[in-house]
Image (cartoon, rainbow, N blue to C red; front, side, top):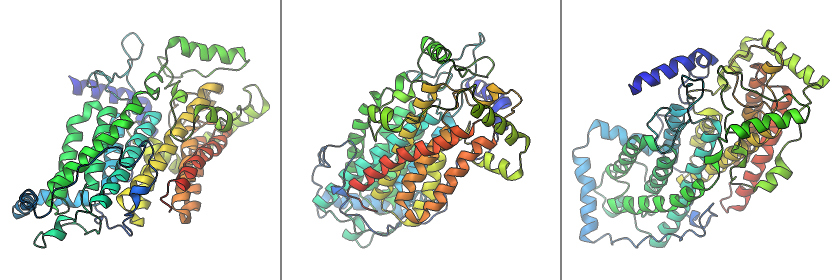
Length: 519
């Protein structure tokens, strides 16, 4: 029955959305066949870096490890040898997969979960729409609907929790300085690149522990899958000879403890109320009319409630709400009845009428709609491909992904604040002759989400890898233009979105400059 419901949903939504050309590509940036992680520097002092939520790297205690000459430790070394003696081809592949990097792999898994859940619910028989429920995640519609704001928030929480957990882990590595098992027993067959870092607590296990706790909150219906990946990850580290069991247990426990601080924050960040209610949706329309403007309204049949109209109230990571309103929120769009708006609406029509192969390519590449990892996930994939080439340590991977994803979450908050503050109609609403190339998103036009996400991503990635700044800025501009070429945004939406995203990214850069990690 569940499969029939899902199939029906995909078929119905597909009539209007699969033809958007945004569902046809797999999760972007999947990197199955890459070499084992071999950091160019270990970042052994990362225990001194500034965490995000932790008060100090030793906020959660980690007990001293057992001695490497103790019977218990020798038994753990023998566990590695027992695994290796009877290793299967599947286990070899598992070791190879996870050896590419813990932060990399869990980000890929998160993108897969986002893509799986990025499906808008189909309407009820009475024309109303159901909402996913975290209390019953396996009921239709499945929880969550991983739309762009939800996805951006998920990426941020997972990345930030992993970073803080690793800062704590590196503190204890230096404190206890227990050698890796292959440095204790030379007869161990080492299946990964060796490291000078102490192995207790395991950096892989701390990343896994933090990821599992966050993903259980964000994707509660996928716990079996998440736990399966966690078990594979932990076993891969033991089989490879990189860690003994106590390295793994200590790391996982630390990761889970740190993640609970982020779980607590997430439960109180106001995202749960972002859907709003009918009275609030009606008030948005009335407020726009009272200002003499044409309000946005859903062009879906039946009309779908607006997507997360209160997401702009969610607690940001990089700045407070007053800063957002006074320093980052953009000025108003052109008045609906102004000559400027007429010009921009006419331009949207011309973009559709004069479509080219190159425009179509750009629209398709950046669409990131239903069934994909969303625009934030697309930028995560872009970052991952470039981070692989830089040979970062796990902790630097986590720090860089946290900076990127906090900027993307906060860009979503700023963007959705502007969308519902101004409640501006789409070009297709003002001129029905405009037939978009990617469907019509179910929320107001100003400012462009793609543009805001891309402006933020280009800003922080240019800081992290400055030699790629021109590339990132060009990609951000292309992503922004894709929404104009598709006929779903005015020029002002895109240009102001890029600038606003850049402002958000600047706060991430400021944090990067003050966290002690350098570049």
